[in-house]
Every structure is written in C-alpha cells, then in structure tokens.
Length: 319
Image 1 (cartoon, rainbow, N blue to C red):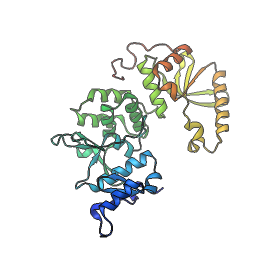
Image 2 (cartoon, helix red, strand yellow; image 1 turned 135 degrees about the vertical axis):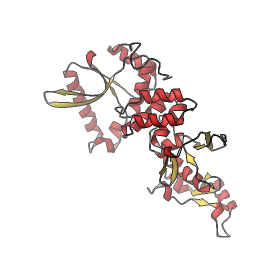
Image 3 (cartoon, rainbow, N blue to C red; image 1 turned 90 degrees about the vertical axis):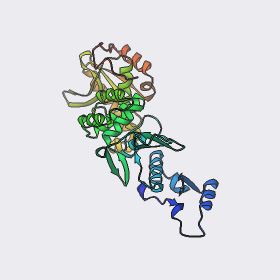
Image 4 (cartoon, one colour; image 1 turned 45 degrees about the horizontal axis):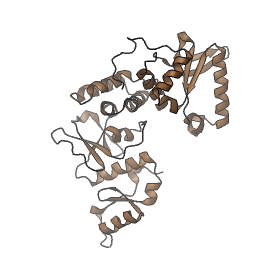
C-alpha cells in the first residue's frame, strides 16, 4: 500500500479541465464512485476502500491540510493516529486540530478545534503534516480521554523510547490546561514495561478496583534456563498474571514464523514450567480486562490481596 500522502486526492479548487467540475465530483460522491474526504476534496472509491480506519483518518488529515490556506496543527487523537499510537476504542470520526487560545475553539462537522496554545517546540512534521510532538500528544490525550485510552497511549510512547522527563516538560509547557491534574496522574502511572494495549488496560482496571500493584515483565528461570517474562507478577505470593490478546496467536508478525498451533503449544509448555516452580498462573482476555470488577474478582480469588492505602499513589485520579 502506498503512503497516504501519495494518494490521489482531487481538490476542486485546483481543477483546470473545464469538463471536470465541482458538481461532477459531488455527484460521484453521491453515487458512490468517489468519497468526499474534506470540503472540496475527493478520492476514488477503490482508494478509500483499500484503507483501514487509521489510514482513512490520515487520508482525511492530508486532504484537510491541502484545502486550508494555512497548514493546520493536528493534535489530540489525530496526532495519536499520526504517531501510530494504539487506541483502546475506535479511530475517531472527527479530525482534531489545535488553534491559538485567542482564536477560540470552533468545532464544526468533521473537525474538532481545540483552543490551545502549542509552542513551536511541541510541533513536529510527520509526512508533510504539522502534528503535535509525541510528548505533547500524550499530555493532550491524557487531559481529555478515558484513563484506559490515555494510559495505553502513554505506555506506548514510553515504550517507544520517549523519556518520561520529556513528557513532564511538555506538561509544564501546556499548563494551564484543562484536565492538567488528570494528565499528570496518567504520566505518573505510565510505565514503559507495559508491552501492549491489553496490558495497559489491565493495569488501569486493577488500579481502579484496588488490586495490589504487580511487578511488570518479571523474568522467571528454571534449570533449563529462562522460561520467559510474565506480564504481571506478585512474586512474594507466587502468583503471575498473563493477559492473552488474539494477536499473540493470529498476527503472523508476532509468531516469529510459528503456526498458531505451535504458539498455543509453546504457551502450554511455558505455563507448565512456571507451574513447576510452584507459581499460580492466572490468565485473562480482553473481555475480562475491560470489566474491572470481573478482573479484580479473578485476581482476588487467586490470592492477590487488595492494594495497601499508600501503594502507588492512592490519590491518582484513574477513574
């Protein structure tokens, strides 16, 4: 698939052929042979259908940028998409842009405008688009999003190598910012060791329900050597937790050349080795992680205790 920025986008303001009119493209959008991706911008139906939700959002960002007199600054969830950050929920329908505080937010239709001052140091170029930096994107989403989405994005940004100090610097430049305390709590809670959106969601659900804080990505060994790194561990209790996402079994890029059946067998062998050490292994999937009470009940039943009142900053606003 070609880059989104290379897609053939028709801008009606640039039409030179007198036989090609705005009305023709509008009719093509109505009959389904074209798709309107921004005011005065169209792409062919095949171009649109060949893209996934993230690519479609990026395509609309490119089209919107090309139809503006001045390049817009994409922020919040649009910036998260541009930075390839994971989202717990669906890709947003609306584009998100930031404008100066003196301009006032003018959200309309397919575009949400945020009245926020963004210094140049927090602006980057991604494939020709002006986008808030990775650190500023974490701050903006954390100030407004659900905790599950915010922590997922923050964990991923840190895992990509972004120092938490850089996020804190961006937070300080953003203040005063509506939701700044909420954003700070997300930054405090974020952990680069959380390796997937499912693990991030699980951590948030555990914290909300008062589950004792686990260690992350703890290695276990036996006489044969390294068994592996477990997602969650309460080593003093002899309990480990594994969050099982479908990608582990279905995504070829994560199977390292193994078949899905081989992955299942390897996981069984790995779990047997962990149990042979005297560990209790608790597994759960997306459906359980997304229901905090159910996940907490599963862990409490396995012997994980409630969190101590002073453990991991009891005042975090992870709600």
